Length: 101
Image (cartoon, rainbow, N blue to C red; front, top):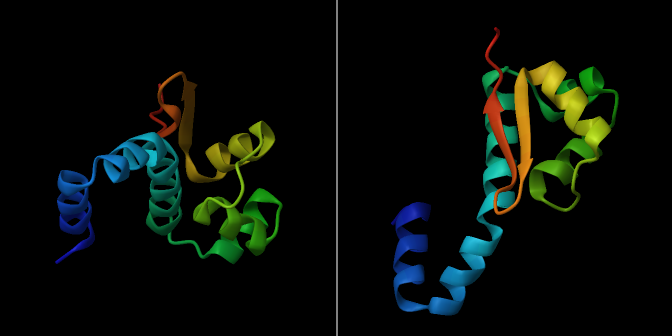
């Protein structure tokens, strides 16, 4: 059984679990997108940290969800990874690949 199947089955039988997943989904999607963008750029956490001007441990905390990013950090990540961040009610913080105009 893969992760997505496990989550779907658990949500189907446990309404509290489903509610918690829905509440935390935006943060999970943010972390997943950040990790995906870093990997797509071919960067390690250490390399990303050097380009952003922070430590590898700080990148690890962002990717694990242990720390929320500051606006300044979001800006530097956007520049380095070519991302666009959107903060909106109900969505918390979403990430998309920046498209050049």
